[in-house]
Every structure is written in structure tokens, then in C-alpha cells.
Image (cartoon, rainbow, N blue to C red):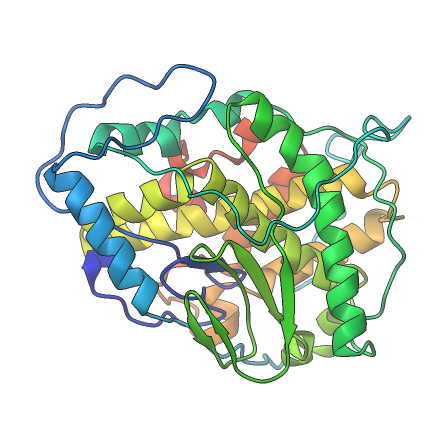
Length: 367
């Protein structure tokens, strides 16, 4: 959280210290001190991990991780009485790709219950490079991909049915995201999904509220069974809503496994309160964009036409800080509805991961 003093943001917040979620995905945070010159970008191949040395930056990163691993930030997702106007449906220029599937030979790995450590920066300069010039931005997502998964109404499904369905979805998410991350030199283990209807203990703390989150402490995704009931009916019944929420959480997993997540939190700890909120919004809107790129990739195989994509744009609008809080000028860490929807729409329009580089975009675009 900004300034190293976590406080629960408005709206659908992220999970604990080591987590990210739809309203806001929080992860970790580090240091303080003056800015340093950017360090050389690590060579391609295996991601460079911090050396075990007693640097101030490294010590602060580790301290921030410990603090974040103890804290749990979960905000109740409040219903709103009305939704936004229906956005324009994606046009031909940004419609998901169609044609032969490009990944039918891909076999996703099983859920990884004991994943390797997350990569993290060793210096301030390296953290800056990880968020702005990451090797993953040089890649593109495969599209269209064949997501072989039956549809499910999350509003009427049992907890067991929903958990099975969302874990199947993880296989489709891996098919879209593992190839580009591997090409960029990063590992992407498959996160398990836990659906809960009562408080559940995680490595990020106890999740008590109606929420969805990626916990970096155990590298798992958590989803509250009654989550969609907190939305207006037109949003709650949107086809592929639960899957899109999970795709956002998986976007945090992509950030975590490519060192973007912990690097951003390290830099956020060094920033002023307002600067820290901007950094947090960059993380959240990037996860929105990553989630949309997955939706773009599977739209053909999941029968997501223009009308359904427009519904998912409305969903993203409805998790904006202003919509959830009812405060039009709120200054929080997830982004306003219009910004979140804009980045989701941007992801729908491009297979290039660089299109989701919120860290080099104007601060106003993530407001």
C-alpha cells in the first residue's frame, strides 16, 4: 500500500499483502530512500533473481514482504443501484481474432500446489525495468485459442461445481499465458482456485468478505461463491462474468511470475501517497487488460459475440472505485470505472502484450 502504511481501499479490494484481486490486487511492497539509476536489464533466459546480499533495497523488500504477508486487506464488494450506460461494442478493428485455433496441441500442467518462489528485483533500477520494460511486453498471446470448457451459470451452481469449473478455466488461462511467459524467460506454474462461502485461511490472511483475489503468498486464486450477487442484476447475469473476474486475478499471477507485481509494490513503498495510488492503479488496470486479452483469445471457442463482450465491458466498469463507493471523485488504488473499462477494451483490441503496459502510460489514463 502507498507510503508503507496499508489501509483498506474503497471497493472491491485486493487480498492481503501478497495478493491481487478484481477490485484491487495488492501484492507486496518495499523500500525507501532516494532514486537510483536504472540497472542493466537482465539478459534473456531465466529471470534474474536477487542476490543474497545485505543491500538496503533488498532488506526493505524482504521486510515489506513480511509485513504484507501478515496483513490482510479485503473490502466488501457493495452493490450499486444502477450500472453505466452500455458501452459501444468492439468494432471490426478490435474484434477478437477468428480462424483456426493455434494451440490445440497444448496440454496444461496440473495445478501446482508447491510452486517455485516468485522472482523479485534486487535493486530499484531493476524494479523499474521490470515494470516498464519487462521481457513479457515483447511477446504476444496466441489467438484464437481453443478453450474446451462447458458453460456454467455461477449464480445457480454449487460451490463444488463452481470450483471445478474455475479450475478447468485455469487450464484455458495457462494455454493463453504460459507460452508467451515462457518465451520471455519466466516460469508460470498453474494456480489452483479455491471457492469459498465462509471465511477461508490463506497465506495472505483470512478472507472473510465477498471477494476474489490472487494471493502471492501461496500463489493461489480465491473466489467467493456469492460474489456476483453483489452486482446489479444486469451485471450479475452477464455471461462469462465469473470467468472474466478469474481472468483478472490470473492477470495478477502473470504479474507475479514476471516480477512486475513485487517490483511495483517495492516502488510503491518508496513513493508518496498519491504516487503510490497511481502505481497501484497501474497494476490493477493492467490486470484488467491482461484479463481482456485472455477473453479476446478464447472468444471464438467460448461463443463470446459482440453483445457478450459489451456486457463484460460493463462488468469491468462496475468494479471501478467510483462505482463501488458511490463517490465520483474518489482517489483510490483500483481506478475509476471508465479507466478500468478503457483498459479492458484495449486488451480486447490487441494480441500484443505491450498494449497492456500501463506503467509507461500517462497517469491520467489509469485514474
